[in-house]
Image (cartoon, rainbow, N blue to C red; front, side, top):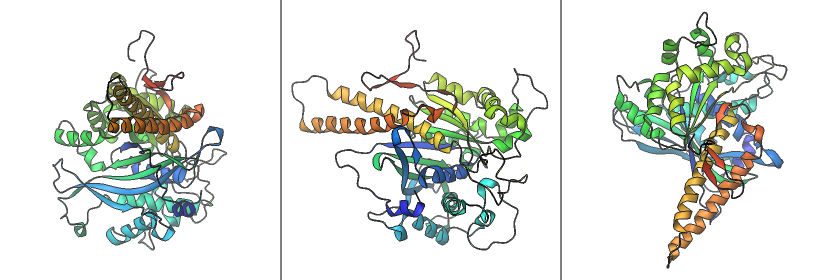
Amino acid sequence: MAFKHFMQNLVHQDTPETELQQIVIALMGGSASGKTSFFQGIMESMVNKSVKLSGGDTLLLEPIKVSRGVSPETESGDVKEEVLITAPPGADTGDSLFSQMMQYANDFAPMDSTFGEAPAQPEKNAEQVTTRDIAGSSDKDQLAESLKLADQLRKMFTINPDDGFQAPTATVRYVEITFRVTVNDEPKCLLTITDYAGELLDNASAEFNSRMVDILSSFIRRSDAVIMLANSRSLSGLLEETYTPEQCMFKEQVTRKDLSADNICAVIRSMRVEGYTLLLALTQTDSPQIDERISRNKFSRAQRDLRSYIYEIAFSTAASRHWSYGSIPVTVIGRKRDGSPNVDEQNRLLPDAVLRQENVDTSVLFCLYNAVMRRMMELQHEKTELEKPMRLRPNDMKKRIAALRAEIRTLGELRDALGSKPELFAKVFDPYFALEVISETGEVHVMRTSSGNKR
């Protein structure tokens, strides 16, 4: 679906009798991990065009709100949410979410090379290209739109004195965009993707700033899933000169520091939740600058070692607390169908580039699928409790039971649409699904081993 046509149809009326459940996915990564680029990939692969599911079903994300959390005190846990942009009822293209975002950026954020003329500067990475870089690309219009939106999200981490705070005491904790998830144009749930400021993670060392760990983990706990992002290009300089199959292929201490892995693991370890989802995404995997030893066999060895040695605490936490988890290589630029790169040796987009986003949609849908399962199980448990035999059932309780049935049914339709395409998650490396569907009843249960214990 073209972006402008999509924006003209931005707002739908929710089904009155069914409240749309809200799923939250958190993005976590240090500086230059590729979080903003990941947002760009979401716009290109899931908003500008729909995801094709089995049986002819199509899934689409419709953005409806952009907000951010600000705190005037650097060490304070108090956060005020600012709704920056919403899609008003009956919005047309000229009054769309995207148009508001562009105006917001022009009014409150510094101009950079994405807009208009800019002073000469070093070329950006391929996943942060400017509109000047894509003059020869057949995908330039679509890429330009999503680039601008991703850039606005980055700029929204900037606090300006006009916002009512005095820099540098004001701190933006997060920026988030909320989507309506539709299957065949029917709303199924709301999906909020939250991008936490890299500075939060950079300052979250458990050794030096346990308070920041507590703040960030309190944010992450409010989500249903977390995607940890690690830049694949950074890994090439972190390889051991020689290593055996039993050893980690990366310099462990250096790699953990470079990827902010210790801080990420400290946040994950401090979380006390069940039914959660954890996904490691290796970004910028299209780059020719990546060492062949890392990209070999679809990054399988690299993913294994990252999970076993660098993010070991995060994944051991996921296993012990019965979370769903996995890892996946992603790219916003991709390679051509013949396997040749879309970028040159300096990582600049080539004039004949044919953009092919890879696995960004799978990353989001893997988290969405597992989160939907968890939410269905919670709703089912609440319904079961309310339906226990009793002499008198008040009208408000009957209404709540009816609402729960409708919400479970709506989420079940989304779960079935995602689950009808087994190959959808085939690119997730060594995935573990903590929850399973009992086919006879359609209910969701915690997966168990043959011994009957939680795995």
